[in-house]
Image 1 (tube, one colour):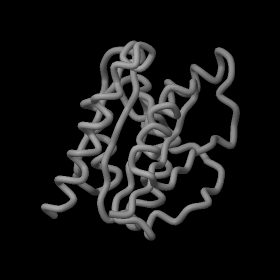
Image 2 (cartoon, rainbow, N blue to C red):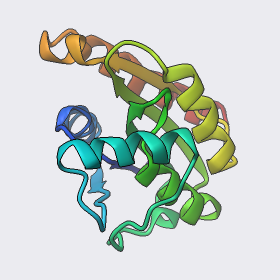
Image 3 (cartoon, rainbow, N blue to C red):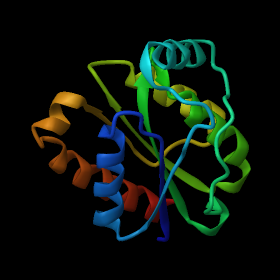
Length: 161
C-alpha cells in the first residue's frame, strides 16, 4: 500500500500528527499552504467564516500528484465544527485523483463528526478510517496509541477493499 499524507496546519498541531503518521507508515507527506495570511484576529475571523460558509480559498500549488498513491490520508484542524477551508479546496480539486482516503483531525474538543462528514462529501469517498484528536491529547502525548490504531485500521480496511 503506497500512502500519502496531505494536511493543513495553522498552529502546528495537525502537522505534528501528520508527521507522526507519515513516519509510522514511512510514506510521503505534503503540507497545504494558504495564498493569503491567516495571522492575527482578521485571519482567525476569515478562517471561521470560510469554514462556516464552506468557502474554498485559493491555496498554493501542491507538488505531489495524489493519483500516484493507493491511499491519501487527509489531515485538518476543526474550525467552527468544519474542516479547514484549505483542505476543502484541496479535496474539491483532487477528489477524482484519489482512490482511497482516510481522515484525521485535530480540535479543541468537538466538531469532528461534522468535519468528517463534510470531508467525505467533498472527496466523494468513504474513508477507510477516521481519527479525531484533541489538542490536549496531543500535548500530553496520548495520541500515539490512537495513531497506531488508526494506521492499523487503514491497513486492515485497505486489504478488504
